Length: 385
Image (cartoon, rainbow, N blue to C red):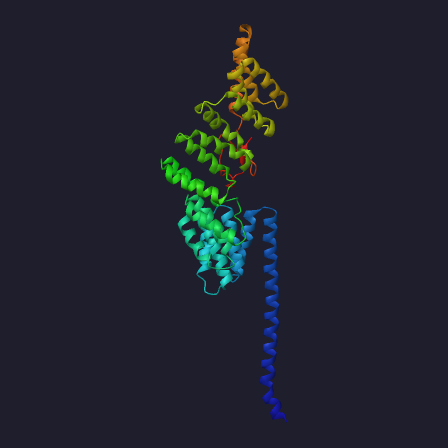
């Protein structure tokens, strides 16, 4: 019996040693996990408090203690990118994608973030290559097409941008910034119009109107093309079509409308009637001012003054007041002339600082109509102010 007990002593010692090892390993794991959790919480608190620098420090500490956590690497890389330290972001994400222990979803996430790093760095060819590979993966497909769409718009590759837009629409996920195939066709038409390729430009515009019959930009460009070719009657009808397509851009048709009427030698009363309709219906100042000019040429400055007084009563603006002073100079007494000249010049200077167009999405203002806002990159959000 004593012999058996002697033989069991090593087994008991080994069992005790293993139990102790398990205890301390479990204790270390609990303490290590608790430490990592606290570090994560600290980093998240810094993020929520918009203390990006301290958040980065907290997460970088995690990289040294928790090298296996892919999400930590991605988060730190993203923070570096947000702070503008693109080289560090690229370094972290590039190190991730060469690891062999990543599963498919982690590999896709790392590649997607690296593509965003390349875009932020202006390395669009590298970013394009990454996102082209990711469109074949279901989880990354939509995001990859959206990023490719941004790249192609930046590079003015409109045909490729159209394909991305169609792909997103087919997935039931419209592009996020109002991109449409019709707008890209208009971009192609403008390029060819500037190159005096009227025939090709017309084809693009006809396709744009087939794609979107309500595309006012295509109608404006078509009218411009028809005026260039001396087809003023067709241009006039095309301009009038804009009202039913997008009434917000009616101010853009006023000047070409007047030109068409002049070239066709139509009665001034016809133009006065249409401009009066536009002003009464939509209240655009540009229609009111054009109407005033037509009244002056047909009925004299006195009648134009009466019209502008009514306009100012309804909606007083610097431009309307400036126009009125011009008519008063023409019709007023000589004793008032010097005062009116000074007033007219002062209003001219004041109006020169007033933006003509305003983006309804981000508030960007300017003196030109941008079909794509230069600031927020949204389409068709810029309107006459």
